[in-house]
Length: 273
Image (cartoon, rainbow, N blue to C red; front, side, top):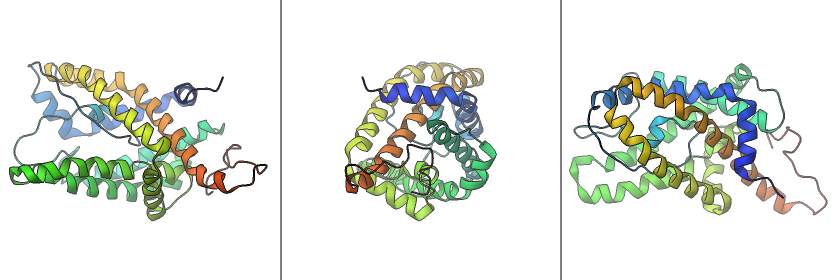
């Protein structure tokens, strides 16, 4: 009986279990999200959030902190956002590189993966932030209902088209432009990429129903505890996303090969394919 995606992702995540510290750390490094959520504690409320797959899911993947005024959510203040994005890129490169290595029975080397992939991952993350942020601003710009109506599907579309790019940087050794272009191509092809995106979004919505009242009623200590609780499931989700991208990225080449030609990527050497 074929092994399910969840079983394979669990096996990969188990090989790099200490990497779960990365989602927890990035949760806490989003200082504005932490302070806004901690300051709002004391009441009971429920919220539902739909999020598409991301390189490193965090607590903020399933929960949006409360905001006031006309703004779109950023993990930190704009003055320190470049530093946050740089740290995020370094951690993401080592994290995704280790997951890919574990999936291909290669000993993970966090530092080597950071050295190899941090810069292109940073470029991809900046493009993702600017694109999704630009559409997200339409949701709140001037309180215009029409702009908000247009902004929401555009945010989802941008997230759907681009979420595979950081994984492709690592799994296929792509530069920024090629990773973004290939991610868009995979998204437009639909198939398993689309199916996983939908399942992930629905899963986030379900989890958000349970997480939101806990965070709404708690304070800083609750955020720390929840960051730790969600860390390993986040690693599991990243492993599953990596497996999906790795497989669907091979599909066009697989379709063009002769029936008896071997498949790339099964010997741990598919980077740069």
